[in-house]
Length: 239
Length: 239
DNA sequence: ATCATGATTAATGTATACATACCATCAATA
DNA sequence: TATTGATGGTATGTATACATTAATCATGAT
Image (cartoon, rainbow over all chains, first blue to last red; front, side, top):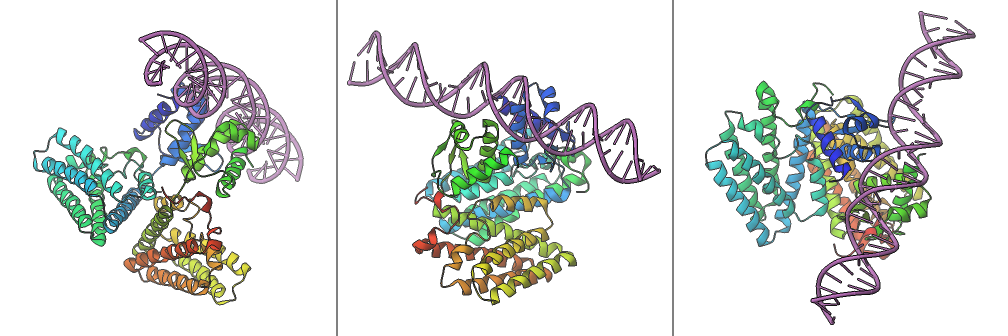
């Protein structure tokens, strides 16, 4: 593995764990000292993490750990929902190949089995995997490199991912109900795409993203659940 | 001006002008020879242009000039419209400060005066400036850093910008009609935001982006107009 | 006391030497 | 003849020395 990749992974971990505090300026040399690689891969990692949204470039040069408000998380989720809605609508309007449909339906049935089974840790872990796959496949149904790329950027933020709040969900009493609702939305979107119902597909996908909104609000209420939100270390009350 | 910035500007120009052909692989050394800067700023420029969407990273390392299909342009415009629609809806739902509203209304009236005046080169040049400003201000009305950032990325592609097809438009017989329609949409969006009509604001902003769709189709028909489309050198029939 | 100005320091920006991985070409052997 | 291996060249990856710019602090004058 290259030094650049190693540096990206290490830095990302340091940021998400809160070891590097939000707002903190990151000098290249301090990272060199900390991680033991030269400035070149460090610079590369800083650029990539800025692109990812974890860092912000300072006007005078250099980078600082970005901080987010609760409103930012909300907006990131809304943005993802909007773009996934676009993907779903395009898929419905343009039609999809039978093979693709079969593939995502299989994924859908896998999720069905999980949701109907008993809820233990393994189940939530499998759910995350299958859920990510579902969203990935759905984006693929739109058949658009441009849209795919844009969504990839939108979900790069740790709390914007479709599965960002599943861990939180697992700790909530409402978890089964939420899973059932989310799965019904999965089913509906595929049905809408199959029937070429663009508006329905879009609306459902948008609403689906609001499951994350709800989980966010619930998580912010329960102190225990807060710490399960990925990237929570970056959240500040204001700004 | 830094060497990195100079390299980015030079490379972008070479790519958009078609001097570097779509699909062509760019080795760092060849650029070093061509532009007379060292590998370090060249590498930085390559990373930034990949982020911008003009280059694609090859699996084996290195970069190639990206190429686009007509469908890609279409999707890029649709993506921008969707995100600007999101911004308009959020602005309407959340409300905007009177100062902001006054500012964009002033911009709107400036556009009014231009559209009603006679259409010469200077007018189209001013139109591009004011139109960019209008879109910029509108995005600001949403008051969301996350949404702003996402839109900035979406319009980075040369043909995705709100003003990408204005030059084309100027060369078309339908240009006055198109300008009038576009301006009516501008007016309607602001009115909708002012009246807190989220759905209307979103729908109008989406439809507004389809002015670019129409201009694209018209441009592709007229051979003379084709060359006025920014980034046309990157367009290939397939892929 | 405050502001300005200079020196000092520390940061990023740049160039380049060196390491390494990949690819193509050619030769040798099965 | 085909396939495999060795070998060279060319690319990117990395480290680091050097240049340049920006921030900071101290010192002086107003």
